[in-house]
Every structure is written in structure tokens, then in C-alpha cells.
Image (tube, rainbow, N blue to C red; front, top):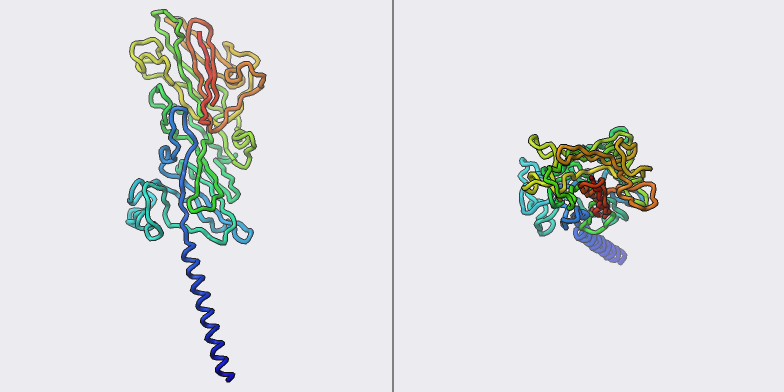
Length: 391
């Protein structure tokens, strides 16, 4: 009798054990959900409404960490500077080495129905159902990988105090343009952080740099037949080299995140070619020898604060950030320096003006027979306009 009872008990225990194991295996299988990403950018310009990241960059790099049992696993990150690539259709793509002959469908098709277009990465990662937190940091361009680092706390660092980021004083437009469409932003940085715990991590990228534009306008009161030519427009005394730490940001935004050393870069609007030394404003051919109403500068710059100057304009250079304008009417030259902060502050009582990351600032320069004057607008990639009248 006792033996019979023991056999029954053992059989029952075995059945319970099998049922439990089967259930656990099924749960684990059902919970293997791959990480996927969607990526968007903040509005790039007032004239361009595109906000899908792939319109600007077809790759981004991402870091990711998970927190289990109250501890961040920093030894084995989920994503360690991994490249995501935008696929419009199935194909090998640059994230898959040619020798491996892998396609997105080949790897991702075993997990879920592959969709195009979408962002994909190599070697699929899966969500951990026991993780209580995730932290993701992403950035573009991926060519900046040697300058960018991220932490499990969501801190993004671009450059270091020992190796600061340099914003090259490069004109981003090949030729002056009447509209400010996207033109490359080769030296722009965009970053995104997310703590999403959904299968598709939504990354909203924002511009870390500020964009500055200059537009030339001929005063409509000019009736002279003499050539009106702008020979030079320069932004002087700006911080051009810096490094960025997102954990230093304050509620005010980007300025506290960027650390700006004293190294400065001059931003200058180049002439239109060897044959023409400047921008003629009253020629016959628009965009060729008549640049009235055209943008001649589109530059990225480190977010910074420009101090207000006592004088609005003078013939000698300011110690504060300023704009220099040189032009001729006929054979007579004109030039002057104008305090940059004063142009954007206007009649306000502020003592400085903040050029913030993710914002666009436009200086409209009106050239005419009266003294130079400015008007301004400030907008997120918001556009900010200023105006200067040069006479």
C-alpha cells in the first residue's frame, strides 16, 4: 500500500514538474520581442517640414543599457555604439559585411514580418522582461563616433575639455539660395535619449548646434545706376570650439551644456567666384550678378551667449561678438561693425542674447544710401531673424 502511494506521488510530482517547465519555456519564447527603432528630427528650417531622420541621415548610432534588480548592467550594454541603418527595401546594406551575404529579411524575417522602409541593425537584441529600466542614447552623424560618448544615465558627451569639438567655418550652401532648404549640415550634431520600454523605441533627435543665416536686401529707395556690391560679411568674436555634456543642461536649454573655451572662429560669407569679389545687388541676372533677396551665409555655430555692447555700431571692431559689413556703391567704399547682441535684443533691456542649440537665426542686411540698419526675428529650427540696414 505504501509502495503504491509513493508511486502515485512520484508520478504526480513528475507531471507537475513537466507542466511547470513547459509553461516557462512557452513564456520565454513569447516574450522574445526584438528592439526596433523609429527616428525623427526636430524641424530643420522654417521652409522645410521634413522631420523623419532619414531625410537628413540614413544611419545613427545608439547606446543602450538595462537595469535589473536595481542595478544598471554597465559591463554588458544592450547596445554599445551600434549603427542603425535605414532600409528602403531588403538588401545587404553597409551594416552587413558583404562576405556574410546577409539581408535584413534574412535576419529579421525569422523574428517578425520584415517591413520596409524601416531602421535595422545587425545582431538582433531582445527585451528583458525582468529589466525595470532602459536607457538609450543616440546620435548622428555616425562619423563622429570618436567624439561622442554616452552613459547609462543618459548623459551624452561630444568632445572633451582635452579634445574639444571644432565647428569648421564652412559655408554649407554651395551657392547662395533664395530658400533655406536642407543643405547637408556636415558638421551638425543631433542627439536623442529615450527611456521607452516598448518594442519600438521612439527617438526624437534635436540639433545641438545653432544655425546662422545672412540674407542681403537692396534698399528699395536706391535709384542709382552704380553697382552696389557687398564685398564681405563676417561674424567676429564668436566661440568656435567647444565640448558638450548633456548632464550640464539646465532648464534654460543648451547653453549650460556647451562648454566654450576662448578659441574663436570667424564666420565669413565668401564671394561668388574669382571673377566677382562680392555680391552685386542690382545686376540683371538673379542669383548670378544680382543677389538682392538671397541668402549668402548658412553656418552652424556653437550655442553661446553674446554680450550687449554700449555702442550699436562703429568703425572699429567690438570686443563683443559683432558683424562686419563692407560694401561699395560705385567706387565709394563703406564699412562698419555692428554689435550682434544689440541687433537681436533691439530696444529690450537685456544685457545679452543667447544663441541656443536647435534654433535658427537669420540676419537680414539691407544695403542702401542711408546708414546700415538691422531688423531681427527669432524662431525651434525655430527661426530667428535680424535685420541690418547698411548705407
